[in-house]
Length: 405
Ligand SMILES: *Cc1c(COP(=O)(O)O)cnc(C)c1O
Image 1 (tube, helix red, strand yellow):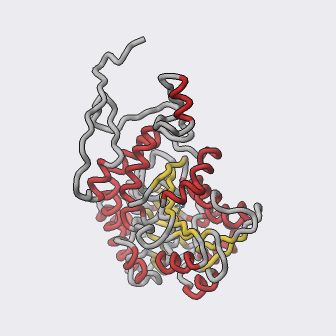
Image 2 (tube, rainbow, N blue to C red):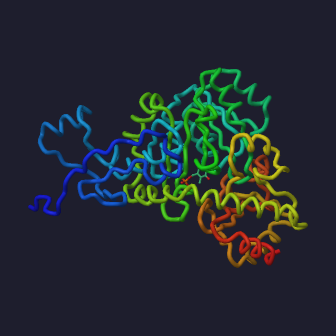
């Protein structure tokens, strides 16, 4: 068998910079662990298992006495690079990558709750998050209560009783409802709750829930983190104490693991996430303003518009309105479908946060599962479209929308 014939030599240690690196620098540098080959780019370790130099080393590795990778369900070097990089961008003590956004959302809550516990959540959310909270967890004896995103009194009332977990999705998908993360976190901590934020719609570029007082952040990395429509993935970030007390064992044994290949795609995607999300958010702001001026449109939901009921809070906790716009038409479903079918650049698709602009009819697709009553409560009527603004030139997108009208 060959014995490292190609000049494999562990690289000499280099001291860390003595100053704090900016997010842009972290996005291309954090977590980079080069092998003895000295490769420039992050390596893809597409392996499920690991070998040991001796039986004793295997024992010590399993006993956590030495740092040595053991098994792909627990950790892998490429996955670690992605996790370290995202943790550095988020400003979190740890990050755990998962196979999808939903496995991240489920694990982040399921690892904490038992029968009889109480969970409080914001009422507007992605349909699968709703199913986990309102159908799956109650089956196991967990009590879940919903509060309208901007109902300050409702939050104060719901969080006057002992609560295990508070789950908030802000902005929400697809209506971009805003929850005051700091206000809810303060109330939650008074009753001993752990605050989990679904930060998918803002991405780590535009909103930092941990700085605002939240305890845990979760992502669908399928959205802006990949941002180029290639892989399904998720991530959970927060404090080491939450990882050690709750999450670590749950993840190890239930196995919602991220694929090393997907982690490799994502570690490269993170290099450009700042540029992508900022550009998408700037274009979305222009498009939201344009849509608001159109007679065909009844209302535009975008956190960067003064007309948004959560505008003041969004200004406080987000550094941009994001890439997604909720649009309510004056016409019925057939008028809305006619508009979608007339688009020449923007694609009809159910994804978001992609470099390609995508338009969705949530009531009949992404949120269909919720049924008419819940959809009505969330304001997702048959006249609502969700536009995810991509990286095309904003004037091409404006022209496309204009000609479709
Ligand atoms: C897409 C999405 C999820 C689920 O992520 P997947 O990667 O599709 O599993 C969760 N929350 C929000 C807000 C989303 O938009």
